Image (cartoon, rainbow, N blue to C red; front, side):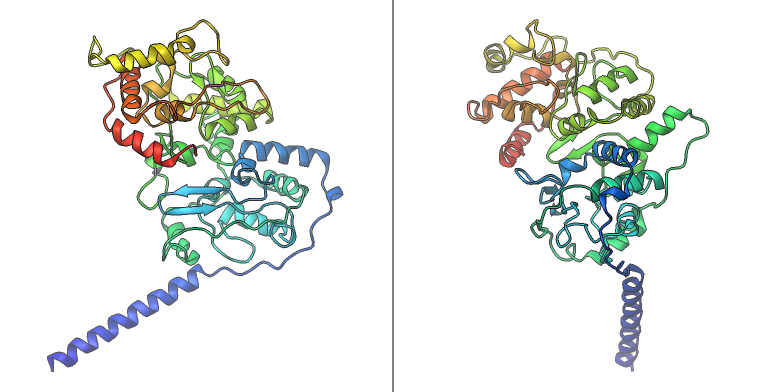
Length: 423
């Protein structure tokens, strides 16, 4: 009798689980949108195309959707995540491998709901959780711009994701937990420029995708907006009141940095931020000013920080001192101004920041000459410094210029940076 009752309970539990799974599959299912004939280029007016180009620059679209050495917007760039590698898609209007058969409705569904034309859920490496904020006019302008690019036949590699993450329908559960769909709602307490900046920074600019920490399921922690996060092996610094910059940011400094990729009191853009500033150089200046005004307000009142290093006299580090004197001082202690001279390291967030990651990567890989506006150039030392020497140099810079307590885990950070190479 007891065995019979137990069996009935198990059967009922299996029925409940089965109905639950079936219900979730029904919830996750999205219909395909029929393929459409591509619109002709002359169906879009010049102002719409110009606005679309500026939005693509604000969104850094070309950077993510272009593989190293590949055709612009043709996809194939690897995007490393804690769960595996995702490859960006081809967003040229190619009819077979791109979005040439996508109607505007299909394009907007991808941007606003994270579902492609065929009904597959998109991984949030494509930041639709930000793009959902776009208004109709901007969405239409971006569609017009993308549909008038040069078509390129190119298929990205298959994503490298373990089971069950390679099953896209489970993303419906992620969306249920973390995705908030809908256009940007202006804050009536703020002026027009602030709202414009918030709309752009949190929408097409998706600043939080890098500058906000994420939880174990890869979703941004909304209560820590702009508090710093990981981005392709780099640390994206906090751009709220947690900023560790020695000189506080203001709107003018942010505007100069975003527009030019450097600022004399804050140093140079590097890592994933470098192409962002390069793209913003072609965006409307009023939009860049609005973003700067919004982010500056989030950072709070610009009050210069005081040195708070725990030790008035840095610990002895003869190796680090010698390496700095022979390899770094001629630029960083010189009189040549930015962008061609080295930033004063007391002003560099690489020295004052939360982790040694970016300082290590810059020392190893250097700064490569940018395309377009003048920018910083620095040689890399990956082939000349041993791990021990690099640890000594990083510790010396932190102790003598960082004005913060020593970093922990420098040795492991060096090993990780070495293992990743120049990504």
